[in-house]
Length: 530
Image (tube, rainbow, N blue to C red):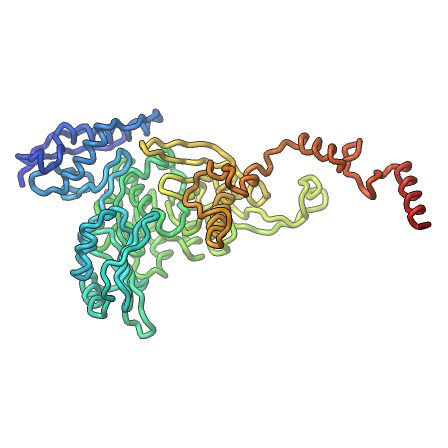
């Protein structure tokens, strides 16, 4: 198919928009995706990135720009009579553009692995873009699982047979030592479940997506040279974020980037890495237990400036991270967890945040600090000075690890950066007192009470305003610690808990002075005489 170069634009951020069009474009088939609309869409993306890099406020995209983006993306799927886009490579299709994100998922390649009668329901499914994974378990119906509250859907009534699993296994190829495989040229991950004899009895087909736009949440941190650790639950998008960071650092910031790809989840399956990682180099790991060895090998042989590591989970990998950081190489890694306290209490990974040790203080020092003689303190400087808690797609919490760990061990709440993104794509950064542990425990309590038939139903989001509702019997907990000390003391004095000198009343309700003790003694004598 012949293409015509429409425009090439470059910004100070290094983002280049390449727009190509066929010799003849059918505007009807593209549902109104005109050439001018495509140019506006690409220009908007370019301007937005440049504005964010310069620290300027980015306004919400205009309605016509969003329409042009959606029409352009739908046109890119329409075949030979539509306009195409080249973000990662000439054949790449942008499956989503909402002014903030561009998503490429290569979902058709994954669907081809499934049984024939299962493919059609997924091809035409209305929530195809929210597909998380497809589960094929022997003797059960094939199940499609979606993001958010969409849940799961049974794709056919007939259960999965051994022939279905054998056909999918033959299409995927050989599974590694971690029981994972992939589809060459894509980011999808296939995991298997084996029985006691080693035979495959279940497959989990996880959808891998290359997303452009997540890095805008931490654009200022990416430009620094500090090591960063992303913490989040499975499926929240940690690997997706570091994949885009690798592309930005290698292509836009021109740094020497090496990716330690244990399961080929960052750079995709095959010897040629996926174009989503840009010009970053990738080292594959023959066995998951050897990841720490490959990390050290990368530093010694490839002279990297930045090393990316996914799913740090063993003590040897944590020690390798510290060794690399002490050699002056920037690290970007991920680990499983929800909040910083999870790492502090994890003896295997606590070294990533500096480690924890018990210290015995002298009498004078304990009295000066106003604490016990045995306290917990940070052992060493943290391997990762910056930690990002990923709670939702648009809700991240950034920690200065040294300060946050010290404050947490001292029983205080650290000051953190709450980074959020609105529907228009604008990123807001607010300094606030850390309270995500309270939010998570409150959310868990809400789910528990809802399941038990309590007054409060399950909470599905982090909307803090909902916790101040008059219908919430636990709303009063949000105000704990907010009452000034002088007001609390005045209230206690009014109720008789404090004496005139401001001290707590002790002994009896008459007070502790001599006159009160005489009255009390006389009253007891009278009662004893009765």
